[in-house]
Each structure stands twice: as structure tokens, then as C-alpha cells.
Image 1 (cartoon, rainbow, N blue to C red):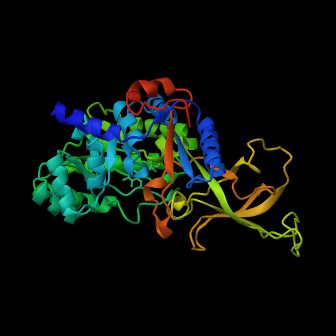
Image 2: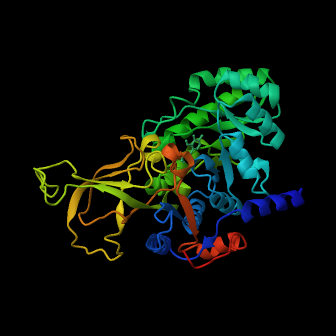
Image 3: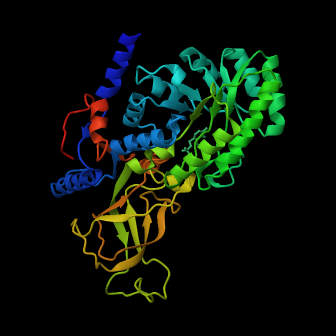
Length: 446
Ligand code: PLP
């Protein structure tokens, strides 16, 4: 009921942290200054790493999507970053959601006011209990790519609207998914025949070209395969009405991918009148919206009075001689290095306690490490950083919104980095309009 939804709304949003105005850079600085003040006053936790999330950036990505892919309905893949503000914003902007588990479905429905038809349960291999609770929650759309899944669904959710996930060429992506999911076209007719026999309703086709797809022409081939799968559906006695083009959208390649997709859909589905096209973008929406500030908590550097055989300023030497230890690492936000093949690029936020960094600052070959006792916990093996950096200085990392905090652990007892929310630049006013009443306390301060 709407009363229940309202209750949900209040519960969720009363627990949200404040939403600040102004550009993320200001909040990075404010956060650091606050930490420095606390450090000066000998308070604990003064140096904790923190994220700054610019919600207007998420808004701008949504606008970009609508401009370049107006005929494709985005279903945000919440696995990528299930941040409550991001979910709330995208829900208000009318996006759908791609969920991979029970927990994600609950998180979306708990926002309140979201019809379960806006969710696709896009995990082709689900636990029976998850399928059952999806049925209870009214989530009908779900993917499959194997025959066991069909038996499972027939037993506990016979009214489900099924989408056959086909195998796409994922060789042009940093994160390949085809080894785990996707039915090759030669097995699709058998799967559809089995679905028919079990009286199941298959409504369409999905694919995923792999995450971080660097060659947008892959979408063309995937659409061609989808066309074949649609024809197989027709031969099996189905009339498919949904095409799900998955995720994989890279920020820098987005406009090109949009052109390739649009042209391929026009070519292979020329009379697409009654076919709904959806997508499952994750990283596209959030990657750029989050930056991380991390404090240098320790340093191992050669002592000035004992010069090493080869100094780090010596071009002959290619081994970093200065090691910085920061308070987030690969067991935390930087798990993206291990699980998502990301490389991260630190920049200096404060040098020698000051924000004023001289352009002529001498650089030294350095390495950056996370805080745990594991030697695997390396954030950057080699990076040039100003030689004057000290314990207590801050490093910044941009593009930290995708596949970072969602998979971070508390290994060694280190807490996850918290988020400061801002409404940043262009689009900020719209974000405030949508989210304004929620978490509005404390505007203007970091
Ligand atoms: N859909 C599915 C089924 C996925 O597995 C993933 C990522 O793993 C996504 C969507 C999101 O992909 P991306 O973040 O590359 O857009």
C-alpha cells in the first residue's frame, strides 16, 4: 500500500547521511581540513579515508543515456554500486533495476514506490529460494541459460517472464562473462523447446558483451545473434517482445556504442514496433561520480643520511624506493584492482600539510600500499609522486564509483571508507529537486 511505501521511504531516508551542496573538490578539501583539525586536537579517527560522491554526475550520465539511447530503457545494475542515494535518485528519474539476488531486490523495493515490474532478475543461475521469493515480491522478469533453471522456475514461479541469455562475443572486454553465463545459439532451440514443454513464458533475449567493453562494434554482432534467437523463438511458438542489450558501457566509448547499437537494432529489428528494448548499465552511471581521499598513514623511505646505491631520482634505477601506506587498500575500496582489473591513478591532495602544491615539485618513483599486513595489498606498484610527500598527507583517486565499495571487506579489522554526498555541478539543482527533502540537514559544510 502507499502508506507502507511511505513508511519505507521514511525509514530509509531518515538513515541517510546528509547531502551537501557544492563541487566534490570542495568536499574533498573540507573533509581533509576537518580531519586535520581533529588530528591537531588529538581526536581519534581523524585521518579516515573517505569517498566524495557527486550525485549530479549520476544525473548527467542519465541525461546522456536519454540523449543517445532514447529508445533503450536503462535498468541500473545495482551490483556495481548499491549506494542508497544513487538508487533513490535513479528510481526517481524513472530507471529500472537489474538485480542479481534477493538482497538486491529487497534493497530496491525497500526504497518504496517502485513497481516490481521495473526490476529484472538478471542472474541466469539462481537459488530456488531466491526464485520463490522473487515470485512473492512480484518480480517476474528473470534470465536463464540452462535447462535446470527452467525446471526450478517451473516449480516455484511458473508465471515468470523468462529471458534467454545468449552468449555474446566478450573477447573485447576487460571482464569477460561468457565463461560463466550465456547459452550458445546452437543450444537455444533445445532450451526453448523445453520451456514450451514446461508451459513457461519466454518473452525475449538478453546478452552481455562483458564488462568494460573497449570495442563497441561487439554490440553489432550481439544484436545479430539476438535476431537469430528471436527467430528461434518464433519457430518454438513464442512471440518475443523484449530485447535486453545488457551492460558493458564504457564512459569514453559510450557515444560510439550508442551509434553501433542503434544502427544494429534498426538493421536487425527493422519492424521493432512492439519490441521493448532495455539495457543493464552499471559502471556507466557511477564510475566517475565517486572519488576517494586516502591518508598516508606510513612511509618507508631511505633515510637521507644513508643514501641508497641508486636513488629514486636516478633514471638508471627503475625500482621505487619510497613506499607509501594509505588507509584503504585492495581488501577495501581498491578490491577493484583484483576483481575488476582496474588501474588507479593517485594524485596529491595535500603536500606537506598544504593544498598549495608547486607545479615544479620534484617527482620520485614511488609505490602505494594498502593498510593490511598482506603484501598483496598493493594499490600502485610504480607511480611518480612528489618527493616531499609525508605521513599525514592525502592522496586522491578519481573514478572510484564502480565495483569498489560494494565488494570491499573489513579484513584485518579496517573499516570501510564512508561517503560524503554532494550535488556537485550541472544537474545539481535537479538532483536537489528530486532528493531535496531527504537528508537535507547540514548543507554547505564538509
Ligand atoms: N548485467 C549483468 C548480468 C552483469 O553481470 C553485469 C556486470 O557484471 C552488468 C549488467 C553490469 O555491467 P557493466 O557494469 O559493465 O555495465
